[in-house]
Image (cartoon, rainbow, N blue to C red):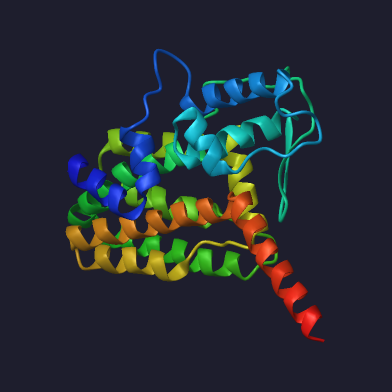
Amino acid sequence: MISDIGIEMSMSHPELAQKAGGESSGASGRLYQRVAEQLAEVIASGEYPVGSRLPAERKLAERFNVSRPTVREAIIALELAGCVEVKGGSGVYITSGSSSGLASTELDVGAFEILEARLMFESETAAVAAKTITEGELADLRAALNSMIAENEQEKVSENADEIFHLLIAKATHNEAIVSVCKHLWSLRNNSNVSASILDKVRQAGSRPRIDEHARILDALEKRDGNAAREAMRDHLNRVVDQLLDSTEAQAVEDALRKVNRERERFSRVR
């Protein structure tokens, strides 16, 4: 099953597949943390002075031989440390030559790392749950989906019902090891500084849990169709990856702004 998921990841998100299979984290330390430390050293050397803008994400990925999601997580870590500032529509700017605020803990797992694990684990969890879920557990899932709908109508973004929905599926497997792993992944998602910062950017962009995707998962579980449940969960989490990629790509915003400015100049010449 894991090999099948690896194929799916490589087709849907080649950068995540590279991160999962082509990048080695070495003897110790998470990859994005080591990239952040190396980039901090480059900044401290004066190559990128305070006030200057970092090169494009693609260039940094090539320089450090890592995927672009890894570069994004490294930049988020540097932003949290006060070394850089990510300006929407402009780029990433150096704000300090010191990396003294750059620290890591065991909880500081990157958001893309967590999603890799969720893609592999929660997809299979849904497939197992489809065979073991009870009518009472299905009723609980329907209630969680209704709560998600209600939360989406509120002005403040909330993901409480989203988390409950996913953990209810884990509990429906009636396997405490599966429940424990799913709870741990959600705990990492919520408590890692780097992950929380990326998720906050997604919320600021106006993203909310997708009701149609969760309804599709529920429908597959109601039909006791393990393959459909696996596919629905995998498609949902792949879409979450897309959200994170879009919401953290400062360079994409910069390119879009440049295009708008070019159009403005063109029309100003016509007037």
